[in-house]
Length: 276
Image (tube, rainbow, N blue to C red; front, side, top):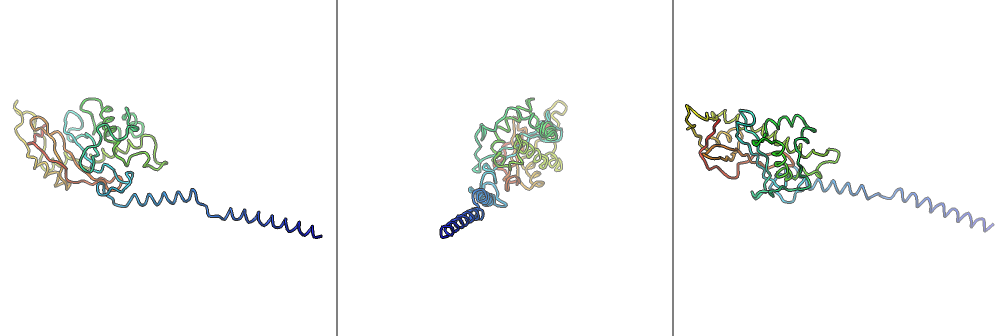
């Protein structure tokens, strides 16, 4: 009889500890993955503050604010290429906040390409058409021009690094689409030709009765017209004989991709010949 009782007690104890162990394992707080996700969310919140402006802080993740936070939109004047009443695009160039240039060979060799035109055409034909019109090469090879701009400058826009995208929002080429689309939209938003014309600054005929053009605009006229419309001063570059070559607009970036215009860094060195 005593053996039977002892056996029952032993069985009961075994059942008790088995149930306790199982319940304890089920009810035990689970860490691991959930803990990592929580920590990741905290890190994202702390490194992507609201309304952060590029070049104002050094403790912000480069996915949240461009590391090279001074950007230059260069628009070129060349009637032989592009629409007759528009400046065409040269490029959007990230620069260091101390105004020094980024590396001449770009910032990420793993993301360089030799075919941009195919990528754009396959992913966004509307953008491709706009680039053919607004971003033509003056040397006849659009793809080579676009490849140069992406490899040297686009790879330096740190917020477009593939690692900065949500995995479900990134496909091969998304970073390039976003870079070129941003530049095209900026060129349309800041339509330099339209606002110069509004202030009666228009190209003068290349020749009048066989004579070269004599009318020249003062840089202050250009600067004043653009500042009156946009609220900031551009920089101007000139070629031989003072001929206007480019208008450059400067930006800081709010958060990841809100371009905020600012006065130019640099000035101008010529009396302007704005000719057809």
